[in-house]
Image (cartoon, rainbow, N blue to C red; front, side):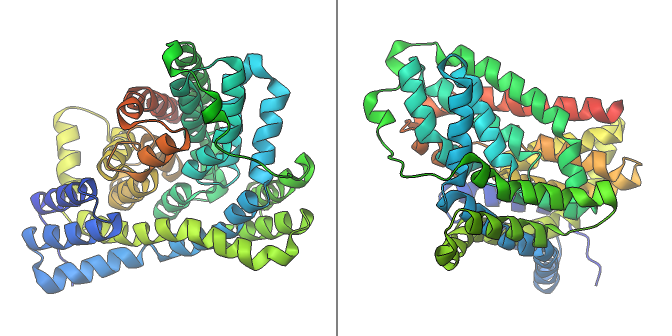
Length: 419
């Protein structure tokens, strides 16, 4: 049964979901309820609306399965101390004089090897606070260095947002990760410049001894041991473009996690670490199911046609839809993963029909989803602020800088496509 919902219904459903999220209703329930109301208002009827929601949620299952297995890698890197060791080594090698750059690069690499961006910031935070205290840096500058580095790493990572975008456009995950390397590096440079500027402002915002002592660290593995698991993942995922051997992320990510557990001598804790990793990915998996319901309604609505007609009326090329949809949907959901998923699921067909190559379209959508993904109605805003004991008002002031970093990667992704 083919149903077409009105644009008004689709937008109303999304708006209701946003309001509910802001009102602290669980994002998954907010999205499901928004999809239901949007579908009913959009003319789908109860049966048609529910059917479309179920179909939309079902389209998320391949992504959800890969994300669930990626939890093994995330859990292993965090619980064995490997992620912290990688970050500590980078910071120590670059030293206090290059503290901001070290913090940004460390967070970028931690996120790029498969740790979620909010967990990457939380992992690097104790190290960043300690070195920031010694170097006399401000808290906003240090936090921006971590967030910007995380944003750069996120668009070249095997994280849920990348998996969702690659699935929606039908492109290879490794190829999508490689496609955004230049945008990621440009975002890193802008991060270091902006964070360095902020880090030197206002002595009243300097990191204190109390901040730096907020987290203690135990014995960590060697750097080689810590990096071995992620290296195996990179090699396995790289076999497809290099040798034509396809290793699905569903296999590569957990293999890297198990290797990390074994080489760090933590085999007896395997089940514990796997359960911890699952606890870190179950939330985003449930979020994706909820996202699928509203994406299903939006995808089956006239929104795609109306947006394309609007772009044509404004004499704008069709490819603009890719970054623009990523920006708007991430802003609506305050989530890189949900934003990239909704935008990809909704507009992939229109972009491909307009002749935009799938890989380029996915890269532009993905980069666009990092511009306004840290608004206050999302968990990332609060998790990152809490990692450095920062108040809401002070945390709000960083949003324009974060948006500029995401906008940098988005603009570069568009330029790479045009070239």
